[in-house]
Length: 95
Image (cartoon, rainbow, N blue to C red):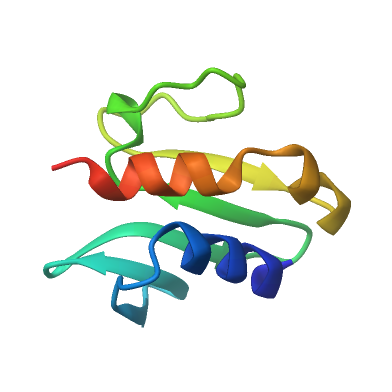
């Protein structure tokens, strides 16, 4: 699942620097981890540092914090039905 999400993110933001931070693959904007892919035992989270500011037309963003939102993916087959590239692109563009 992580590889499929990474490929989708790289398609959306091909020039974004990448690093592993906080146990997640992060796409950096300056020094900030703007978008992250975090593997867990039973799922993968696609994390948006400024997700609270994002549009959510598909209704898939989770979280209630002041800044971050995430999408929980439990099976690789779910990725095809999600607008991953659109969400990653928007999440990355936020200042």
